[in-house]
Image (cartoon, rainbow, N blue to C red; front, side, top):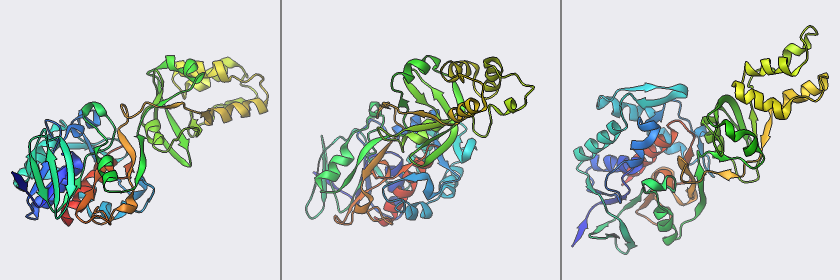
Length: 388
């Protein structure tokens, strides 16, 4: 027997749950179909288990998309302040870390419980372990799972991207978009560690665990945060941020001493020009092991002003060509996705297929690190939920 609803939301993550809450509060009969055994799995592991649920400095410039204007409407109509009000309504304690990032004082479970409670209050029906076999459309949409069938005039696809397959990420949202003839921007790992090519890996990766404050630059973008050396390459916030803009063959530039002049003291003729004194200067800026290793490979061959100038340039412009990324297994998000030309920026509804909506990570809108992707989930979910 077919179960009838006003809207079927495919996916019980951040975007899908927010959409369900907004639609349910407006009297719509809503069903959330989640293929996993519980909702909000990605929320639970986010922010080291404390859920970096938004960023108070959220701006359209914090998002990457083929159409940089697309996200503006939804972000303007559901802001960080709106989500913070919901968090405070449920008396969830939170704190600001660096750069406007908000985290739960306790656990990410509090955010999931909050969303579950809001769904219950809005009379949202949730169906777990609902692996979707087929979606079809005639007079209405029909969604068939392994043991049930649903129908509704509207379907919202909130199935996420390809990142972190071990918690259930699949290509379902993209496959469904292709079924309905929609354009897709090639999905790729975003906010992901980079793998160094040989010989850089041989030179530096035995220093795994060493970190430094850097500016990472690529393709006209730059981020100043921590860089972490790993067993296979580079990670840390600065690298994760720039990775969303990096593509194969593009050079990556790293300033190892932002705002500092390593060789400045050598302009004083009383300061001896030697590897020992240069090492001392470099260790004021970089961790000792990294400073030693850097000098092994980049120490000036002479102590002329020109050679020191070249060394200074290298410190501020370490140029690398990574061999790749750690892939979707380690990516925090999926960049690319449903082409925004296919969707209404106000409602997230497909322009060519009335009643079909796409929200959250499956869309070609990718936030920077630091709560921005959650804010896009809340904002795009709210936009669709209000439109249903």
